[in-house]
Amino acid sequence: MTAVATAERVEDGPAWARPFLLMSGGVVALAAVLAAARLPAPDLTVWLEAVALAGSTVLLIAVAWWLTGRPGVVDRRIVLAWGLGSGAILGALWLAEIAFNNLTPHSVSTAAARGVLDNTTWAIVGLVTLAAAARVTARTGRWRSGVRAGAWSGAGSGLAAAVGGALLVGLLRPHVERDPLMLAEWRSQGSGTGLAAYVARETMAGVFGHLWALGVVQGALLGLIAASVTAAVARSRRPGGRPVAAGDAE
Image (cartoon, rainbow, N blue to C red):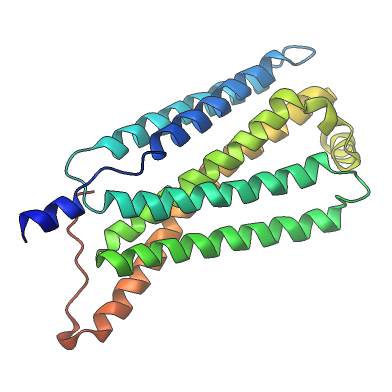
């Protein structure tokens, strides 16, 4: 491989990547602590959830910050552009879903409407994550780069969704408390917990799930699936079945 080709492969990521990570992670961590501090009465469970969410978010941003600046990483720009870039866009979709479910008139955001929107949003997020990972694998010829793109897409969408959920519980919790569906759930499952604490607990758990389960973990798994399938298809089309390269640096 020539020096020019190596320089093209090992390059800096997009200029917006680190600011996006820092700003979104900071908002999530601060809003989580604010949500616990603004409760009418202190609640230990909410504080534990807030510390867990804020701490894990800070850890995620620290690791992501290191990865975006790690020297000698091949395909960094295309991985971040397609991975984290698609994740940021998908995160905006999650933000719209959260806003519809919690901020629109209750006559509009019915249980049926929320169910349809939730499932549709989840399906779109999954499909776009698969497509981004497949695209990176096809463009680079390295399935590990596709897996990384999927994980970055999940991290981006998870962080953006977590921003919406954290701001909701941190700043707009009284609005959520007036939601008829939330009130019905609290009356049936609250078990003596105050409404404010119940809303904070449930919302915080949802934010954590969006960030890690529907974000990082789902993105990595979908990236692995898409990259593996794309690499297998590419190999089957090559004379002699030469495999797609897997030896990139990360």
